[in-house]
Image (cartoon, rainbow, N blue to C red):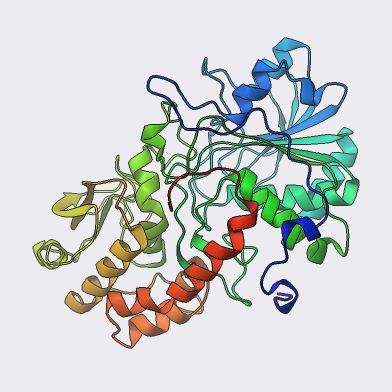
Length: 428
């Protein structure tokens, strides 16, 4: 990994290459009875004028919907006003038919007849080839993110932006709310720990929309990864009526699962923390109706829930629970554990909660271990962004000590990202 002395202090946005932000309307507080308007709907309301006369390639998945629940690609195609020459499907695929770590492959979409390219894991070089092959002049990105560094859609966007910079394509982000709000938490990704679940240095719960992240990526990272070019025409069609202190439940928007194991907005609230259990031999609830809310293993008993109920974890209660996952780790085995119940969604601190859960599991059960891989513990390093979590955890540090270790990084990130934010409201 290159840098980061070049980026220390993150130079002012005005000093960065020009970013043209085309707002579809000023963001303002939502009024009673009035729904938040997504960037996709704002663009549709304008008659798709920002895409007129362009050959368009669309990165999207089932979350790219309009008010009537139709998909933007289907509506663009049916309107006759947008020349969609290619669609790019991320992890889980354009239509969302693949499980975690999977995709739908290259194929012709049966509804529209448009060529769909598999973009999951595709690097910028491959995307650059696909843009050229399909004649893409404008790349549109419309995917609902969930606000965690290791949720892969933002890295699909990053690679798509690098490819756009190299081909000279326009890049249009149809922004959507961050469903877990705008408050940043967690550790920073460190050099040497980049991967498909974290390609650049951002913190674990970044607290930004994809449009805001696109601005940051273009200003701070693209030139270093392209050898010079950035996206010269980057446009963010803003969300109307959303504030940073709003969660998804406050928006009035329908929840469409961004991935098969993200069934509800509550799942998204816990995911930046409980996803860390992917790095353990415990089930993170995949293969149940409550992934990332039900956590356990065959060796867990009632003592874990009892211990967790003594912890001061804001906005959360732990209930003893038993479940049998039908896929993934511990498939078809009865697991003891907990269900993580959200009692106050505006106070939830998912990374703190997960850290307490792991510390207590290790203290109570000698069977607790990192998942089998070489080297052991590599996945927890990639998810948390360094080996610090793992080494402090192994040394017997408390949850409070582990969380305290990254607070300066969180504060620095909060200050650094400020110049790229598009929406107001609260510290979340």
